[in-house]
Image 1 (cartoon, rainbow, N blue to C red):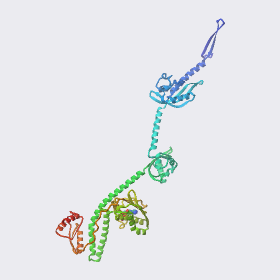
Image 2 (image 1 turned 120 degrees about the vertical axis):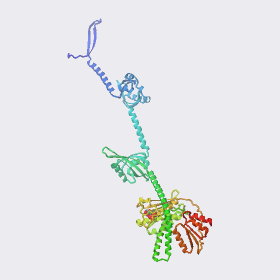
Image 3 (image 1 turned 90 degrees about the vertical axis):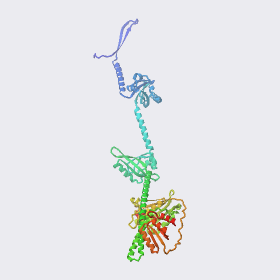
Length: 615
Ligand SMILES: Nc1ncnc2c1ncn2[C@@H]1O[C@H](COP(=O)(O)OP(=O)(O)O)[C@@H](O)[C@H]1O
Ligand SMILES: [Mg+2]
């Protein structure tokens, strides 16, 4: 009536009489418009659903109760690399990695019991090889009957590989942090600080366990806790990363030097959250450096002293000859019958020249080359007798002397009088310095055996030695004393004597903290001295008048000796040349011949040997 069309379902039937004649027909018309529409909608929904499943790159499948594929989206077909027709009806298990069968089947059982499975991972055979897929699956039930399951899968092969790589590199770093010898830590920024994390090397370096470290304050490790604040301030304000050498104290109390490098880690507002740092125990390196430095210093000193020594001996010998003349003639003058005032002046010349002579003598002692006469000496005895010599002077200067002399100190071969001179110089220096600095003092003298070496130390509480002078005090003529009060030769002579004993003399001192002088002597077993000739008994006879030949290349010396000996009543001949002397000796007899050792052309010794042959 409203002109719209409808779908009808027509059912005709004949109505018959008993004989089977058709009486009339009956038609039943049913309006099926709605039912038809519903079916069309369902079909459309299926298409939509399929279209949607094809939008995703993931795998979407449906499997029947026998485990055969009944539905696969485009993503699934693409994944397994086959057209849909080739996959429908195939068992999904055919594509499963054999090693993953068991776990996957267990999951399927779960699904069959009505549960959903989330996150199952297995490997699938694809044209690109085995790929890793992560699955979510849910069962399909119809009227309480299990019909199979549907599942979505995602290829996570790349993600897995990335994760694995990351895991490996993380493991690498973790083992690096764990096994490295450097201490690695994270600490909070407040002045005392807490450790947030420490690696095992931190335990080795500090001696504390990880638990102890995490409980204690960072500043507890510092020998000077204030130092940490300064370090943090530097890192936080001036530079982002700072490396410093710090003094740490280990759990057992030993001090170590560490190199500490810190970086500040900040939040978005720039506030320091924590510090990440690395420390390295450089104690041994520092010690080795210090030792090397000391060795270098000693080597430098030794070579400098030997150069200066050669020069000194050269100068001393050069001065000696003219000095002999100055002293000799000055003394001759004094004895002569001359006006008193001139005599006084001659005396002054003599006294001053004597002073020069004593300096020359000490210079020669410093530059000594001759071998010393050694005895099997007890160093303690030498120390005691030396201290005895200064006992009175020290007492009047308020200097207290404390000795720690090792009663078991072995003896060693040493030139006792030279050693005494060494000790005396060191003691007098300490005495002088302490008295000058504060009119009193304390001197500690110690002897001990250290590694087959006798160590003698003299520790005073005087003014100490400035760093810039430490390397120079063994140099000849280095002195801080006033003119006339010190020659600066004392320690250089000490050094020469000790080195000649194959020992070492060194000093440790800080300005204001006193000084300690250390003599180290090797322990040398007793060696029997070659019997030296006994000095001849004095059976000299006075000869009234002797004929004397004096040989010397120094005219002043010849003149001096000639004057003195002539005044004594002798007949004196002089010559400057060895050859001339030899000629004379061949033709004349002399009671006495005086030879200079050093002569040009032929030495005094050679001349002596030639004379012996004639005689
Ligand atoms: N115990 C000491 N304390 C401080 N300084 C010292 C000590 N011993 C030596 N010195 C320094 O070493 C210098 C050299 O000493 P030395 O060679 O004995 O010469 P001198 O005693 O004639 O000055 C001294 O002038 C002094 O500066
Ligand atoms: Mg001195």
